[in-house]
Image 1 (tube, rainbow, N blue to C red):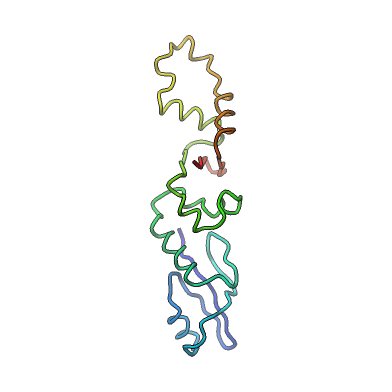
Image 2 (cartoon, rainbow, N blue to C red):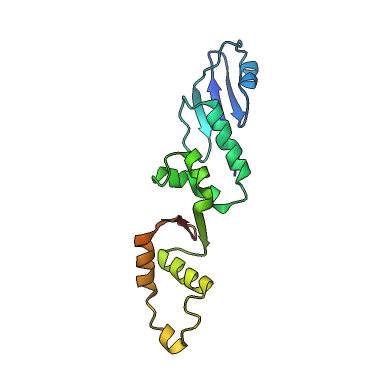
Length: 161
């Protein structure tokens, strides 16, 4: 993941800060006195939406979560899941990240159904002459009814448990 950056403006200057950062650094760079504790974010570079009045503590926390979970592929899709309404915000998405199953090399729920059947060996004991009649599409349809899935469009399907 790329860095998360916010742009803060005051009357004299504009400066970009890489998160996590502290209020004292912002005050020093923008030459604010110590009583200036609030600011508005003029711009941002992040994989998720940042609002002008978002708190620095919350943004720092999210930046730290991105660093902590960078090794999980699902991290790359959390902002999309928030935007699509699977989670209420980024913090909630990170709290639930362990409940996201990443199905690589899948472009549809039917692909996921086939992969799950192969991985679990569901049809292992069934003879080939009978196995060919198995309806993967119907199984995928049942999976879609019973679960939550997000098709990323880049050869990955996320299953949200």
